[in-house]
Image (tube, helix red, strand yellow):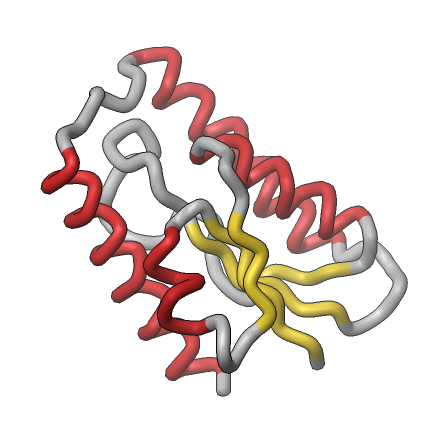
Length: 125
């Protein structure tokens, strides 16, 4: 099973590039979800929840999701989950967009995202 980490968090690439395939994208939160959705259409499966953690999608600009390439067929559970995450995120963003955080806050959000993914990786290995 080939694991791929899709992220917009530079700390993820820094920490995991030697061990995992990392796709670092210069996209916003929704953009990362849409990239993952497109990968699911190409036969990938979600290994981490697209809305993991207690930080709301309109509070943090960072999102990291782990997927795997197992078969060349559409995983309907993954597709349903990512589509639901996109809808939920759009609702949050419509109510209140992500604030223009300073560099200290952005680093904190990167660190939280990194911690979440470390926990997931420890549980799926």
